[in-house]
Length: 185
Image (cartoon, rainbow, N blue to C red; front, side):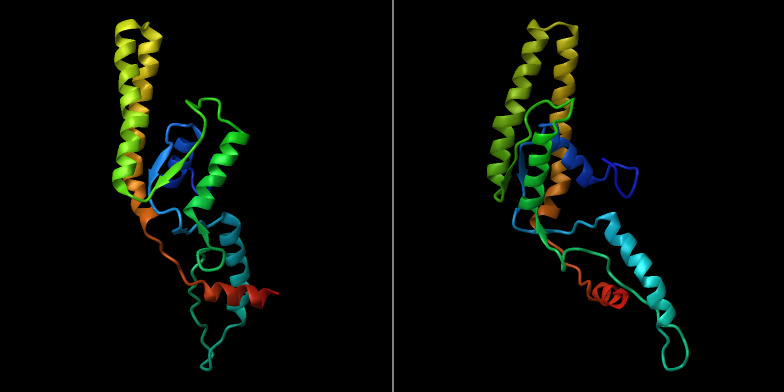
């Protein structure tokens, strides 16, 4: 998934796991605002700030330092449910080749319901398939089920790190960015 950097950040990994059908349940609050920052948003802010800074001189003739948040949370708020539903819709319309299942997602605001869903929908079926393949499966089947089991456990660890972002929200003031955009028009 191309983005600002060439690394797989936590959000990109989460989107990929959902798109592959590995993750179907998350612990979080779908109504919380996610601060997504598209690269064009940042680029426009940087480009607009150049002429703005050239024209900003204080009464002593010194240039003022411009500090601005380049965020979307206060200007175009999007909640987790909307964002992740779009991920599921996109993944369903354009399925990935190596998916293990259909993209689907339930957000559980209560941790205990998430744990139960993970146990019964992921952990138990994966373990059953893994042990069944050890008894009845060929070499390739054993390898595939071992990889699937590993992916399910790694995705659970990933989302343990991810859920604090879905349980809280940080809304950043972008009023100085609004001033920049107004200046450029």
